[in-house]
Length: 341
Image 1 (cartoon, helix red, strand yellow):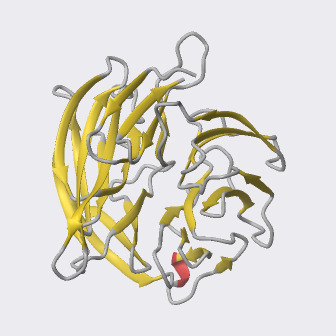
Image 2 (cartoon, one colour):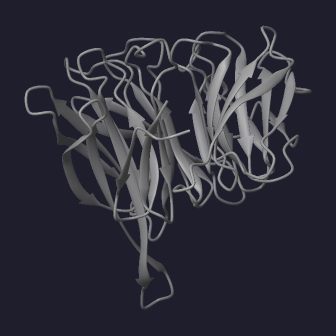
Image 3 (cartoon, rainbow, N blue to C red):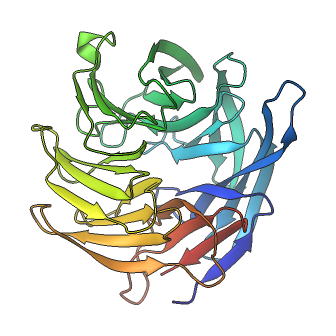
């Protein structure tokens, strides 16, 4: 299939998210991550940039430099009537930016830094996917295996708790969209999926699973179906779970050739998923009504997209001419951002 647009991001492209709000759903934020050399003490030097695009007009709205971006995510509820973007970077920062609807540009609101030397913030997730909260939480996973729970209070990010969750990199952490105050999921390079009951404290996970055979790097709770959770791994498999019964997954979908770096459920269809599957491109997958079967609808690997598939997201804007929602995808080493139907 032909892409609608390909943008050269100059630096390696690895994260993207569309604004979920009707008055700004044409806007997509894109993050980049570039290794630029070796530091004196053996650490890797990295730099990054956030770019803001109008996906309808195909124009760039803004760009600003920052630490190398590992993840970015819009709050699903407006905060003080503004769309708010969280960015996690390799300098240990989680930075919040609010969108000015008149200028269509981001303004920095606040910043949190983990104050740890060479410890990267790897993933972030907001607690307000389905519930409005004037003081939402953000869960952050880090390269030393730690998870940090932050609360946004009086326009500042306050650290509520940090605990060691995994023996190696904690690639991903996510709230249960249906009970974000009490349940957090995490996945690490130790190949373990963990469930944390925040009411019981963080000294011990409530459950852990070794059903994945490699690092667990993507997790997303289904925002339309309670108890349905998707996890992805370097082992190239997506597992669908009923969160009430974690002994065995409901379904195992093999992406054949690509570790599943990101999972994004469709903005309206509870049975459709978009994945960034590294070496095997971007997959659109449809599930059966009971999530016990699946089929691959589309694999996007345009001839100009010949690199690792990392970031991916759906536009929340209504599709044109009856086709499915617009998709944004990030191709890493060839530093390109693609928009396609």
